[in-house]
Length: 478
Ligand code: ADP
Ligand code: MG
Image (cartoon, rainbow, N blue to C red; front, side):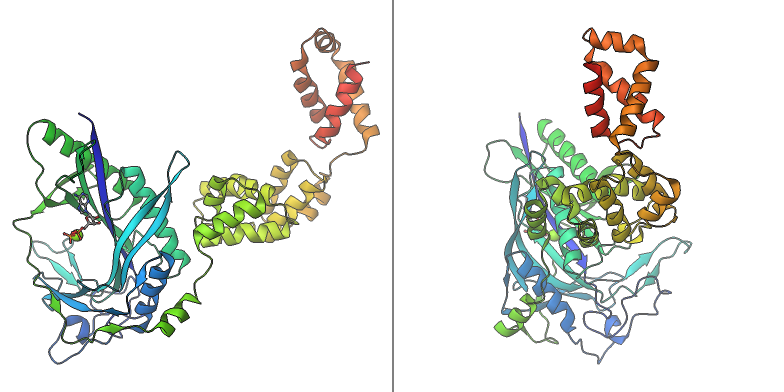
């Protein structure tokens, strides 16, 4: 039987505010345990939560960027459960009326088409603390610095049909929240993580199968592996005549498998109810308009503009707009390269990206600035140097030896465009290789490449390749 995979993701994006969602305590990462949890985060008696206005602006930004409805009225609710890292005994979240409702996002598929994924809702909530098991022999340590950290939980429709689609969707949301500057996207620090709901059904069947929910996955690679493992597990169960149990599972990255955490029967009844300490959140049109005015150019629009303005393929434009920093770098390079879009794209995605990758550097830490790279590309496009020599110059710029013009001058790398000089070199090469000349004239036209290579060798790569080809062809006809 053929099976179809059905996936819905719940993504937790930590909102990049300086203080917590309901208190003034700092959200800075990495502070000593329990130094950033105030009376409100601990839920001590007699304190009241006060909503951080910035998280509302951030949630509204996300809603507007995903064609969602930013609710004029939403409600905070208490989600009740007991856990050591939750001293209040409840988490403040949104339940029936979330601040962001029914939007969508388009993802690009491998076959070049795009697909629309529904966003059911996005709601504001506070994070819990953290249980620490290492370093505490037989005991558990509790760090409440995280308690009260603002989260936006983004829930998708079950529209994803493979692990690949799920990863594409997650990456797209990751790109978007960073463009919007509402989340730093740092997955190692837990600022961006997801729960994957996975089920399978026979191809052609309309009703969804029973799903399992895999909790807290914090890397794109793990999302893909966890889903693939889970799909295989469910298919095996069903084909063996068993059933899938609705349950929460954990992904174990070391063993590359998922295993049960708690079943539906053990699942908590959260007894949600509106939090009496917080007023309903009411937003007026003026507020929403003001937020709309702060939206930057969004990734999709920027990709389409790059593709149109610079003549790039949709794929390349997508790569260059995957982060705001990279897109900015590219555009500044084009400006410095005298408008050479295609050439700039090739160098940013090729030589530069390769070099950065090799040294594990981010684009923001590139020793070759857009001005330096643009200056180099200018010398390619005006014929001062060939593309090959340019790589040599690039290395020198990377090493901090100066700008392109300085390096070209100092190392004498200027391209030989004087056709008289090139013709002399071509004649020398032909005279030194009479055998190959015979073969060429006998029909072995592939030898042209050999001659070009020889001319480049004697000119140390400095001859203009177009000119070399032209002169070679002419002289070989003699
Ligand atoms: P819960 O509140 O129990 O987490 P929801 O109904 O809110 O459940 O759904 C949570 C996520 O599960 C959503 O992203 C949704 O798209 C996804 N989902 C729901 N049903 C299925 C299913 N049968 N297979 C896969 N994903 C599903
Ligand atoms: Mg859930």
